Amino acid sequence: ILKEETTSQLNYSKLAAKIQISDQTVKKWVNMLENFYYGFTIRPWHKNITRSIIKEPKFYLSDWSNIQDIGKKSENFIACHLKKAINFWNESGNGEYGMYYLRDKEKREVDFAITKNDKLWLIAEVKHSNNSSLSKNLEYFQKLTNAEHAFQLILDIPPKNINCFDFRRPIKIPAKTFLSQLP
Image (cartoon, rainbow, N blue to C red; front, side, top):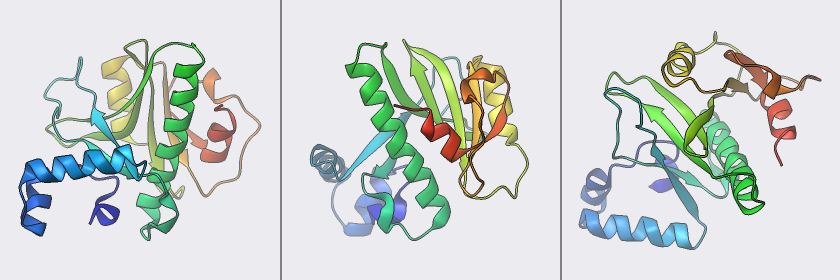
């Protein structure tokens, strides 16, 4: 069930009803799976976000390779690389980093919000293909939060020889370019 629910908000009550156990047991099981590195959760960022969602985490698998849905697989792939980079930055003393997502009650959402020293530093939306325009939610949340960087990461386009972190306005970036600039 978690494999199918990856990248989605985890509703413990709905999961509990599906498998006919208590929601507290589901929370314990998810926590245990995190402790065994099967997956991880990220929580919504809610500081300075009017009408933000504050409860439901999103779940990601540590091994994204078996996910069938290409959109979920792409988002989970990026989540794993961001988590690895954040762990490196934190452990090497480059600051205090965290990973969240953004969503408000109007259902505007951005896949990832990276904090640096408790301030939003980078927000990112993941798309597998370059078929869509720049995400309006990405632009909305960058204006609202003053995040330094806002990227729409596209997986199916070739890398470019640019420094992603030179851009301060929302921009489409090849995911390969972005990932190559992470530790």
